[in-house]
Amino acid sequence: MTQPMDAPRRSPLNRGRVLRAAVALADHCGIDALSMRRLADELGVVPMALYKHVANKEQLLDGMVDVVAGEIDPPVTGADWQAAVRQRILSARRVLLRHPWASRVIESRASPTPVVLDYMNSLAGMFRAGGLSVDLVHHAMHALGSRMWGFTQELFSAAPAPDPQARAVMLRELAGRYPYIAEIAAAATHDEGSLVGQGCDDQFEFEFALDLLLDGLARLHQHGWTPSRPK
Image 1 (cartoon, helix red, strand yellow):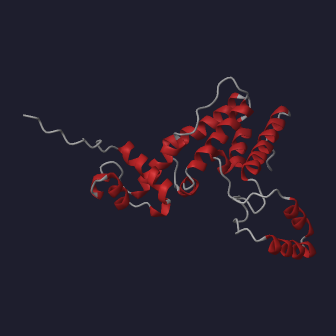
Image 2 (cartoon, rainbow, N blue to C red):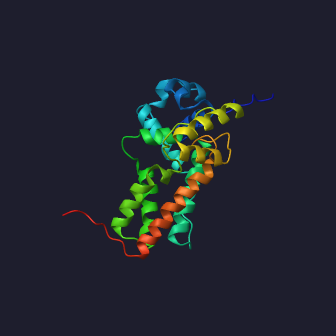
Image 3 (cartoon, helix red, strand yellow):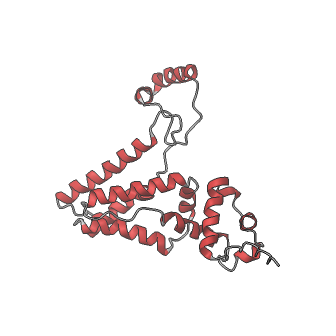
């Protein structure tokens, strides 16, 4: 007699599976759509089963950031500090572009997890391995800010692109009172999907600012910069 086929076994639930499913759900539906109940539905379990692996929503978000940080390429070997830092940060940017919700969650965390600290420590270590002083690295990390994760907090939010006729009117109005802003706006290269402002190329602007910072740090290091504080 033919033996009945075994039903396919469901993968056992563990913390890694929960976190990866949460990341996939946020990628697909957005971070605002993520809830413990919806995540449980995606995994085919009851919500209480999740709490064996994450204590609450905040711990889930911490873990999701860890998953994202774990996708950043490891440090390159054999490169000078400036190239190594640049490569690591641009890898972080590629990762965050794959997970558009992640920058918002990273900014919302009250304290960094060990995985996040590992990443920050690796960047600081690249600067130190390049011979930069502790004081200069301190200020470098402040100057990088969120840019070390591949994103920046821009001065203005992106507005919907006006049609060409409305844009021409807007530029004429700007030129009367704000001639330099109008001049820059008129010269900008068009990029419809820009996050940094209408007419801007996100990737170029990011790399421009990153290179500006790294070149400036290199010059300060070469000139033996030390902090000057009021007594």
